[in-house]
Image (cartoon, rainbow, N blue to C red):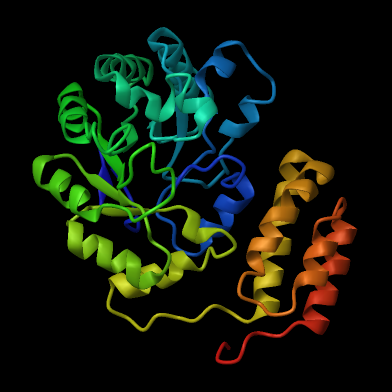
Length: 329
């Protein structure tokens, strides 16, 4: 698939997720088949006010292409300024606008999926980002609407297409649903039939077969993987195989999964310092152990990690004492 003039090597995109998709995890996902990656979501206001903690979120790897920076905010002038900062100060190929985040502190402030309550404002924000983007393709990630009584995604997507947005990602849930219930793939299919720009499907993709099914069912141009990759970047590898009708590879052995986790944490330490990287590694490492039996003790040890030495010690113990479940390689 292609977004504007930017070709993607695979139709699989990694969703921007706060606290998850840092530069280290993105590198791991790209190596396993992600065709496009996005930064964690970046506050336009924080960028405009020159918050020092925000700028590192925009940093992309030296070979991280195609890749985008995702902005959230609802003030058009601030969003324009933030888009200009991204365009001028980063190597991003794309700029994405967050119109989907359902977290109350974001949405209740009118940002993220809060924009689905005010389509005029949403369009003003998109126009502003297009202006500030200096010609870089602008994409939008959205949900169906605020709640089931206000499904506005079709109207909004057509308006955004008319303004010059290069692609839309649709998560098949409302804001009120958060992550509960089932994603509405029928709505994604309906939107695909209405748009001429690329549509990226998002929601309930937890296996390689899910990725192949959502593309086949909706006709979408690409699929964005989100919660399914927590501790499982191999989902990209499995999805690619399923899409191409090949045999889906199993998860690698536990020892390999542990080595991948350690590599991720070492990369993170290079970029954000050992202490912060190790504190953030706690949740990631617990995700990597999903499905492994008898992990209670080691998850307790993971919750105390503060240094890379702790990571190495815990990893050695896990490799020594834990095994893959029966039926896994």
